Image 1 (cartoon, rainbow, N blue to C red):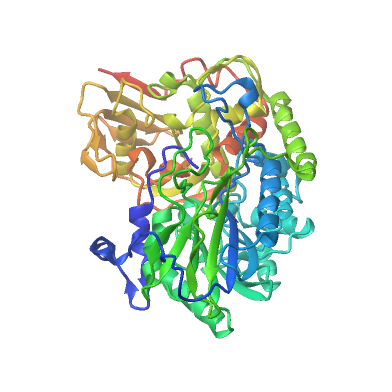
Image 2: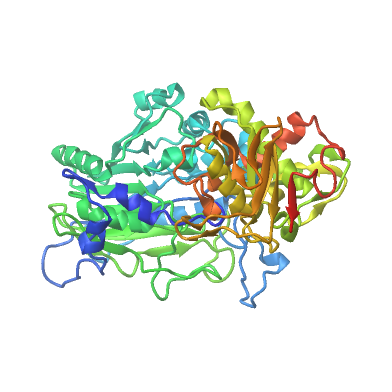
Length: 628
């Protein structure tokens, strides 16, 4: 997840409700055309007999959290040293997943009938960060793929984070699954990967496909995939084409499966917010189950065991009404290897969904403490967790640069004034954007913008060695360098105004800059924005002068100087309008490297491992000057 990410729900619904007649806008959603969320089909003692009890084990958004998460196991409100990584983790997850699958296969169904189990991931199977960097350094096979293959999945959806490092790394992940014995396909009906040779190869082999049919206990269960239409603006799919008419695509795929005699169909949709799945269901036909992903919601009922500190948002599963008036269960998990989703459904002989087993349908927490604790799978522990732990230890010991000067990342400072660490990170964005410009077909940026809220180490890095782990402490989020090719000069001015609107008080929107110098007057009118939409309600008048490093004047005495737009490098959070930056709506391109990767690369290569005091003096070099 990225920091302070605004909800995508409203914008997405302009795209999600697409059927044969075209787009249903927000008015249709508001009018109640998104269906009713309820309790699902009522159980009855009489009526159609259960012919199949289908257990759907599902996971999503595990995002390279291979080593587990902290937990207050004794409930005292404090996480003690022995409570760290007490929950989750790939090794515990594997044990629990296999245990639940075995119980579903061998236990007696409460309602009778044949037993069958399918295992599905919703995507976002890896994520930029120190743990995934172990896989990048190792190469194929990736550790995340080893963990996933160990689960014995039947299918995986494709999320947005699969493309964060570009299509070639996703292809390496697919290769890793194949190499480690995973035989499951990756499904997405609205992605066309033919423009990327590394992925097209797997599409030709049927490994990447629109849908698949799982054969289990004499049953055929169809699985259709969908990926968020926002993919090009939140990740780096390059030449992967993304179709947006989701309902039409899903219905066409379901119709094709139905014609093949498949009468039980699961849609695994990575749409970033469970409400987007709920908005989609009323447009669907012939789909029995929807597994959402990307939103991180916790769905659970009273009595379900949750990891300490977690709170259920709604019940598990949710239900929505489809285009034919049928109730469809909609489920998800919060990700990070914390819960195994277990959805137990009953079907009659004709393949009609009769309802869910309320006793067994639930998120099952992955616990290392208490009565429900599970032991770690020895193979996953040895082949995944131990080497990843070793890699993290090596990051602490890996020196990427030597600094002649202390680097100031103190929270209150990076959010209120120029600091030399802020200068360094902003310079790294410009450097990375220039390095990747030709590959991604964008102009080399001349200005860099880094929001102060994205600098998170809250400390001064002493003069001397700077380690690889320091770069993750400074830039911990999965935010990618993005180039905005054309920022109009008046927009750039208001971008700077947004950065200093709260000054002299600290604010996450404060801007650290590269490639320009500017002055602002705190006594003048501050910019006022609608925090929800980013709309500028009152333009700022604080920024007085802005000059590019090459001497080009953009603003003189508070007036914008006419001229060409400016190519800007920033992080994708800011490029999408995060912190209410006035960049929302401008075209931008993520260039396949995180801002942490940019910082490390700039230290190692751009600065040849040496941060000089002359370039990054204490207090900064005067890029931002406040007057009154």
